[in-house]
Image 1 (cartoon, rainbow, N blue to C red):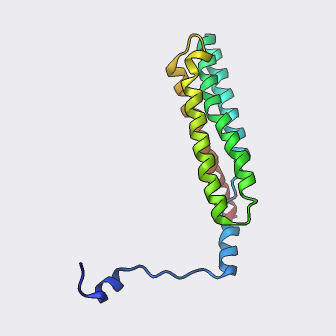
Image 2: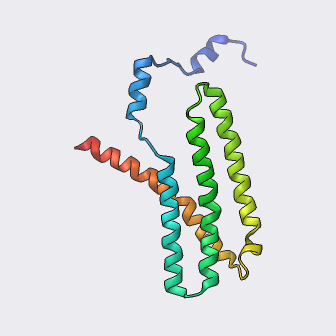
Image 3: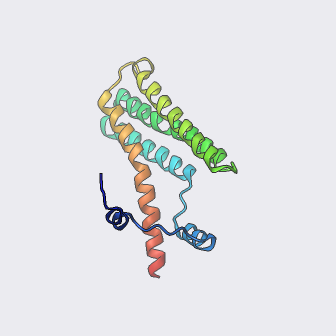
Length: 158
């Protein structure tokens, strides 16, 4: 399309690979997020939400619906965390990445299966309560990552 190759060269970003020392320094500066800690936070937040619903509403059907929404997030996350730990031990980066994609697909399929099974597991299912448990539990991972970022930034200032 372009006839003048000089124009294309000016538009291309300049890429300079990092040296091994620079890459190691960059990795050391990045926050470490333990996937099991995220799963634990998700489970804890889900239990707190279920307890709050129990105290406020007193209805077992709402509590069990919230709890099932929590299970639909925490169980697949735990399966993925287990797979993540095994995949990170692989020497070949390509194999590890491919494995993570496969396990992410397993996580999604397991989540969908748990949600589809909801009406059979919970006799008087409240979809709104299930959705609340599901969304709150899922969004906790962002809170955990934000807290890790905030702690790192606070330590840098001290």
